[in-house]
Image (cartoon, rainbow, N blue to C red; front, side):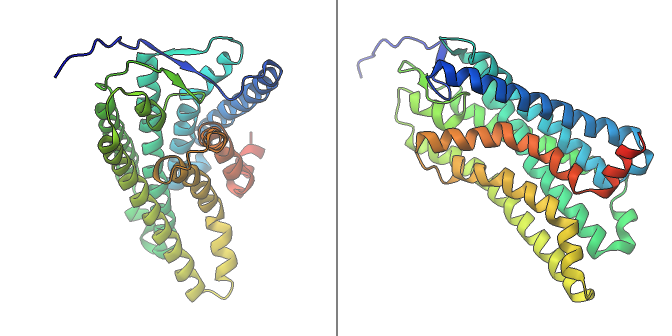
Length: 301
């Protein structure tokens, strides 16, 4: 087969969210404010849980780790997006692009598993209250958090390994505000249809498994409490609504981006913004506004 000279792509051109300069200035102010609130909110929750002895329990230990992951996840893409609003020519190096993909899937995969751990914690607390302290001991909590980090790392490495050696020879434009596998893989110079199936299967197995475990856990919690309490439905909803809301907000965009792609540019961009910017912002707000113990801890400051 005759070899074709291919220029190695050293950087990608990012088209961003829009082309209007006036709109970019407006979005700069909006997303800078949202990012600042996200960072301060998640750091505040972590420090509050560390400082307040009343919050030294398994649930809040897992919540502190969720806030830390959200802090990291929002920092993977948002700062780059904000600085790009000030630039006419938006580019990202090949190495920077691969780093965004790696850390995005690392923290995203870790958060999926951590949400399952939080559901398991609520299952034990509500369905096995007498055994809660013995089951959710210090070793179990650390083990659950370490498992989320390890699975996130394995998932991220497996995703990156499948694309980092692909030949990219142009075009090199990404119609988004950050690098992600569904967009980058389309720029490869070879047929990637089989590789796309493997990548989707990799992400799909992790996301689907976590989502099913979450559905089963919360369904069993609701069913159990409704059977054993007259006002079980209201108690179950008040206990689990925050967790369920976070699950829906996190997994919803993931399903449409990776498992059920719509191939509609503005929808993809909206879901990407929601996943990368809005969800890490909403998580601390949801847990803070709906949690009496967090509110009481804030009052004790």
